[in-house]
View 1 (cartoon, rainbow over the protein chains, first blue to last red):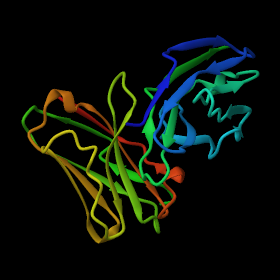
View 2: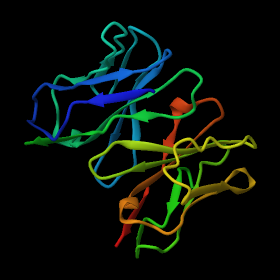
View 3: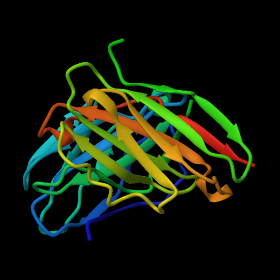
Length: 112
Length: 114
């Protein structure tokens, strides 16, 4: 079945550091890929998405590129801020499916 | 309200008791989803409703879990004879029909089974 694997956390960085959170997936079809973010005390919200190979999703300075050849969708940000501290979830939705399959989440803490 | 709401926000119960968790989706969203977020694990799909179609129950972990959606709007997730391993945050999401990738999530219900 479909699955998503994220790098394990927690991840702790200093402000202005470069961030990468790795995500790889297994899917039978041609999935859409997502990153969701859960800020402390808030609900899960969509950060960015990509619906086909080589698409790049971007939002709030975060980027992720859909790499079909490596089945990856790594999340990157060039300069993180304290306000980026949150739990990040990689997810997929397979073609025709109506559910999201999530990775286990990566807790990110940014220190000033 | 403008978003997905869930109640209660926290629920503490004793092992063996039944619990009901409620979800109010965004008005006009015909698709509704339940997920479970257990400590140290990712979000796990439980069940999906779309309009009047039969729900996709493929994610329900046991027959102690059930859900219904009355009138195509509010949904209730029921867990019978709760066990400690049921302790988790239960998340509800809704979307427009056919737009599973644009799910909006509620704040969740944190269930603790003692």
